[in-house]
Image 1 (tube, rainbow, N blue to C red):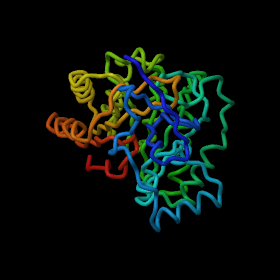
Image 2 (image 1 turned 30 degrees about the vertical axis):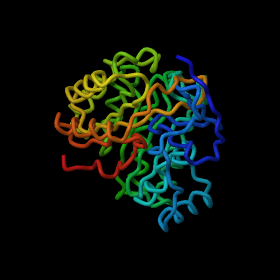
Image 3 (image 1 turned 90 degrees about the vertical axis):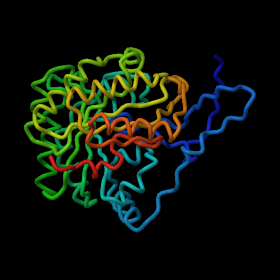
Image 4 (image 1 turned 90 degrees about the horizontal axis):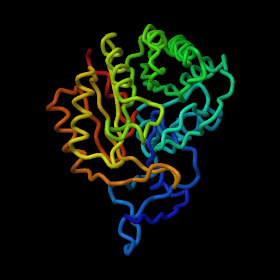
Length: 320
């Protein structure tokens, strides 16, 4: 199959529907594959987004600019930024922006990370307080270079936010800590309201999409989170070449691991060097997966082309 790539400027808001939760895009151009070579490339109409507007968005925008605050909502160019900020939700990334892994879907820089910033927990807590965030989502790069996998900074960041903003609820989108479950326990001990770890893709595609990750290790991570009595969440990107049967298998695996909340969204290729988009999943197909997921027993399913890990995160605080 021949693929033709068309570059669109990053200033085009429609280009910015990128996968956020740990997978945060810092590139300036996005290459989109075109399957039919005899047609002009057109992004599916359902992926078009509106510019962020509204009083609450403008208020948060002003705070971010005035105090030079850092959110993944911005650096990831999330298409849902206006909606989330208006709802009092924001996402922050800790432990730097250089990852020790090189997943084929993710545009975060891979390499040797900088030393851990021990003052980061207080800075993040101050940002949350200044922005008056009601529900805070925290994510990080993978830090396989650290013995504790970054779990100490994770725990200190959660504690710092609770000291400064005791009314703010917390969701953590965490790595798998390479299966070092003592590091996972360190995070679980501080009891964030929601703990999320993304499966990202189906079993069949894991080796090519998540090179250093393991499908079953992610399931074990999620099982341990759920058994700790915490709301457990995971997400899958669609459009990487998976089949419907693959997706239903992954959904069943997540449910068996004790996952309560599932997010399903369209994968978008950050550059021509990354895994190509194989399929554009229609809104109708996303709705089918949502209906099926709820029938299977998930407590909450967010499923749609623009859904990202933290989309509608504030709604996932169901009675537990």
